[in-house]
Length: 117
Image 1: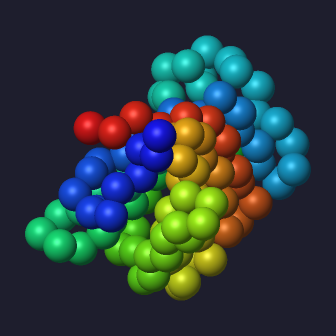
Image 2 (image 1 turned 135 degrees about the vertical axis):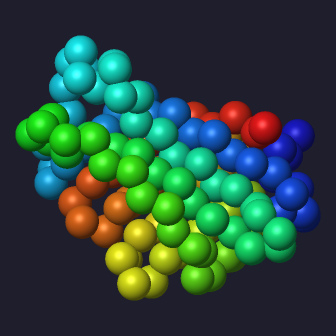
């Protein structure tokens, strides 16, 4: 059963089970637990937006950004949805089992599972 539909009317709320920054895992400290990194893919009035909150390896800050999606691709053979933001070299891939890989383009990765809202 495929959970990815032909429509983009869903909001994906993605929670990481693993986060790395510049190749180093971000430890699950109280700071990380308090600020809860996440990624959301949202369709607003026909346009796609991505909201992303993450924590650098140093864990001294909590950063949140909102991006307009420049390109959307769907690979129907392997059921992957890909969202690209060219200016920041950002991309997120959501797979048919709702696992995801989020690459912020600046050395940060989030890997985990999404839920459809």
